[in-house]
Image (cartoon, rainbow, N blue to C red; front, side, top):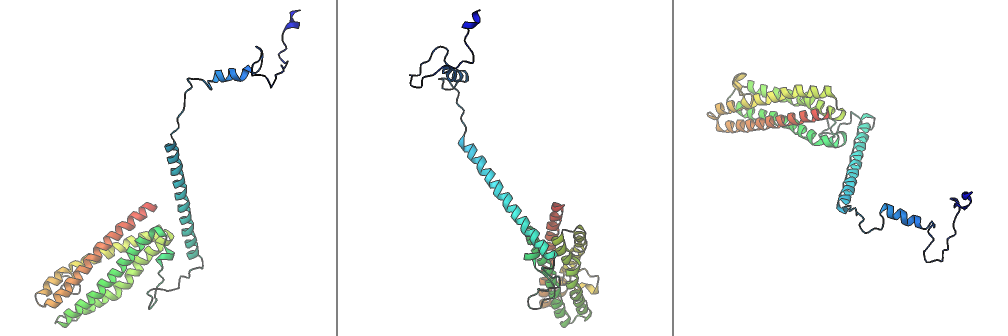
Length: 269
């Protein structure tokens, strides 16, 4: 049969490694060349693929910046969490009064008890709290001058009552709830702050106008009272104008704080 002369497909042909690279027609050395020709490697008209290095570098740089930003954000979150845990635990006693420094009566430490991203807003609210204290104290001074110049003693007692009640109530009713809301992110405390801070703003606007409702309005250094007393006593009128300017500034600052706190509250929710 003719099958004896058929080549064995499993037969391996000996290849001389010292030959010049030529092989017989059935040699296996043609396989790499045929594969290369089939795939197109080493050919004259091979297509080249250009990869822009700038794009790769920009992508790597963006990835690196994003990773660094995420690492910094996580670090800040850990720091805030650590401070919150320290405040919640016995690390910071709630009765450790530290403000004002010369006569501590309250616990107040924004730098250590309030998160970093809310500290600026808390300082603004604290400035508003100090502002109403300044307004009420100067109101007592101006009304005292008016009393000395011949007005009745009733306006002095009213101005004193405003200062005695207004200063601590401002801290208790709206500043301390905001301080605790910033620490605990409590919606109830934020609501409490919004309610009484609106009352605070209403009082500041009322005091800046000083309508003749209570004892002809002279117990508050508003613009109407300033116009009335300025014709009789120029010095008293100057005091009342300064008080009017302070109440106007406090009203504007309070409106700004209210807007900022509301945006912060909506952003967190």
